[in-house]
View 1: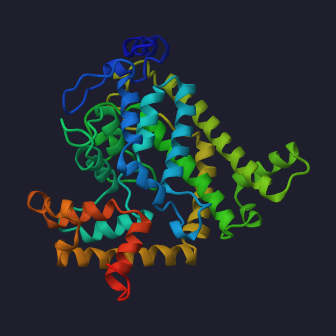
View 2: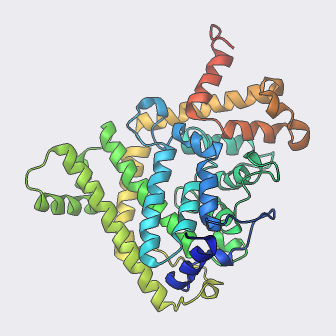
View 3: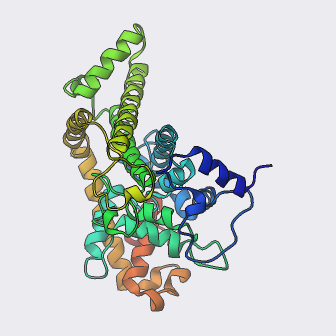
Length: 383
């Protein structure tokens, strides 16, 4: 039998001195007894997986709106891919895999329907009413909005996981609440999730772009990372079909970037003498990072994705349409909040009309938001 105390002893014996151990946690907001057979971060991970917000990620946009096809990635599949990459990196660096996985599973809980278009729309609509940012909203989800326990609001996650949600920062997700502005060391586990999110985002959006026909393998030959990966794949497999070749190239790209990140991070840990958690205090630069040459090549890939995928007229039309009807929905609810469900209406006195509407809309899936729009604006749609 393996108890929580024994799990903590294993962490102490096996994990690197700069890793965050469960017994060193800053604790939870509300006091409760810990589980006898699960570490604090294993428990956090389970609470996140069983949350309503986590289930809703299945029907929230990554790049392509849900009804565009069920073979594209959603926020849920993206989240699972980030968790898988994060665990691989954490294991290689002897970091706390359970903490990394918990942060990875929670990192997108605050996302709105329709991806960044939805976030930008709510940000504009809430500008004079406290604003909107998906990192802060993600923390609000796990601290306030989830209702699972009679003893406390939210999920009562550990300080480290909550900090990982708030401080999540990539070129795609920069809330302005930088990790170094929040008290405490910039844990390597948090940095691993940031880097893993970038890897998953770039390479899996690339994969979806190819599936959609918006990107082509021929155009991608102008991207050095892709061109070199194609050469390696063709050298290894002399006779494979086109679809398998694309899948193997994406696989090769992910492996190349993960390996580079692990090796460069380990070199940074050694050169900067990171030999304890306290050694991370005051460090303003990222320790978990790619090599200089890999960063340069990744910038070329990112620019290609921005120019050819994210700014493609089909994607722009989808996101602009989503933004327009979210604004209309918001106005309808603000004009008459009694159109909200009763459990939302009863929170208005406590939280204010704008915050309640924002919370409700941010929690919507793409599909539910579309259904609500039809209910309000199509005259023959049943209410």
